[in-house]
Amino acid sequence: MKLLGHRRIENTLIYTQLVDFETDDYHSATAETIDEAKKLVEAGFEYVCTHESYMLFRKRK
Image 1 (cartoon, rainbow, N blue to C red):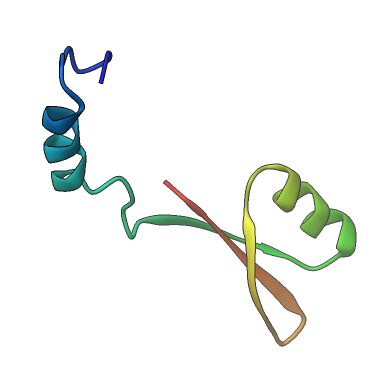
Image 2: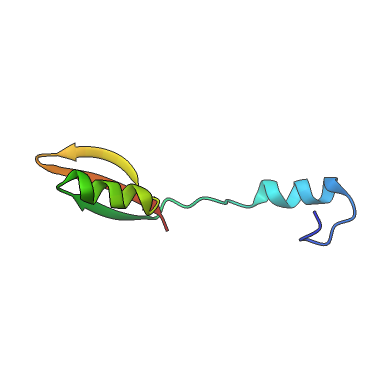
């Protein structure tokens, strides 16, 4: 409310309902070892699945 300069919360609610805060764009990464996977998780990536011997991760752009 303060960031947008609104005096009333009702005005802020109108604007925040119109904004899409998340996109469907991702950075992707792969890991073969536990240490690589650990570094990706610490960097904010989330685990998606394992394919063959690779662990797949993603993080929103």
